[in-house]
Amino acid sequence: MATLRERKTYRDQVLRVLYEAVEGNRLLGITGAQLRRDLHVPEQDLAAACTYLAGEGLITVDWDPGNTPAMVTLTHEGIRRMEAEEEEEEEEGTA
Image (cartoon, rainbow, N blue to C red; front, top):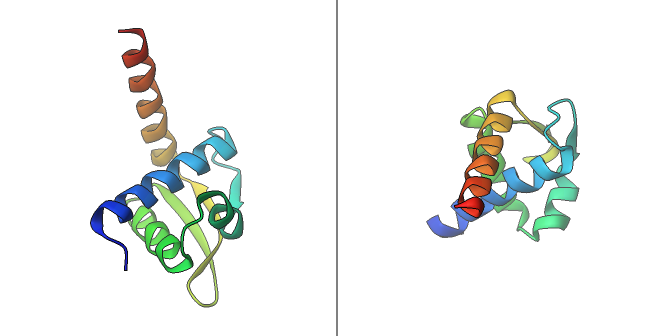
């Protein structure tokens, strides 16, 4: 089982990879298999991260049998959060 720090890292990584992959378009998504390949996250931890983020309203998940993410998409709120983080990073870079 992942530690709290690892779980938080997995969640952040899922959001970042998803945001970069769909370029902020909430009509696009990526497969759970692609997320696993990109992140090298154990399947159980990926499912836990997706469940948490879906509960927060940041992503939507279509599930395959066995609690495996089939397709993952950002919600409007998820895009807003990632854009806010991107703006903060840009502001820190110019300061």
